[in-house]
Image 1 (cartoon, rainbow, N blue to C red):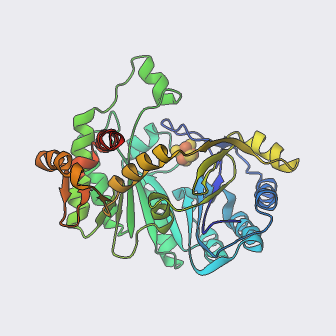
Image 2: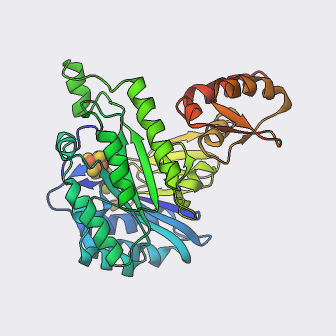
Length: 373
Ligand code: SF4
């Protein structure tokens, strides 16, 4: 049966951004009917009993879900509702690119039950947006926020990318300031990492560019933490900031280790004991569900050790923190002394922003320590 959190991957994009290594399908014309029917088939095939519990969060991610348009999103959610008990208080998020946000689309999304918009702004620097091969400029981001708000969709999250090579001096500070002017409820930051199989990866291999570097990464991350914190945002997870009551419930479910379902090409799923993922290529996923086969691409059973390591990583990435043992306190004291963590009287350790910059290394340090007990 379906768990309370459902992710649907919508793979379509107008073109590929230079840093992107996601599983996407570049389409000028989106095959809406084909895709919506295939998601419905996957639900029937894999969850014939439908929703076991009321769905608390539905997240349309991508790719670019907004490329389905108003009617496409509405039909997708209708098909899901026919098979799932979507709670009256459910958080329903759509990821959108700014150029897809029109009054007509927002009205259709709202009528279908969407109540949270995650907007892929990335930057307000038009030169940088063009360099990233994004399909919008900064003016389009501003218009998208205005339209969404006017149409009553004001639970808006804005994505920004930092640690971008070739950025002009002051451009990141300008991005953070412009994001604040738009008064979103939530902001997500992504530090750019250059993956080998991307346009940037190939340029780096040819020696045409280098990574932004650790100092830039740290400086920009800490600038965002200080500025957004001063403006009233809680830095509640390593990459996420929210106004009071505006934390992402869907992503918080991931970070709390809850079960979730994943539908669509490349979507990941967690059933409490194992992780599975769907075939990544749109054509392969489509062909599987159209011929009545489970579109599974792989599965990983989590051992007790995997789960212990994951609990450490998840606990350290949010402000909820991680409970530690008496034996671990001396280890954590070293982190605290370095300014990377704080520990409270209940032995809950929380990383500081400087600690989050070293999240992987600190999680590895603690899991290694735990493995010896
Ligand atoms: S819009 Fe998002 S998913 Fe699509 S190519 Fe750009 S980064 Fe990748």
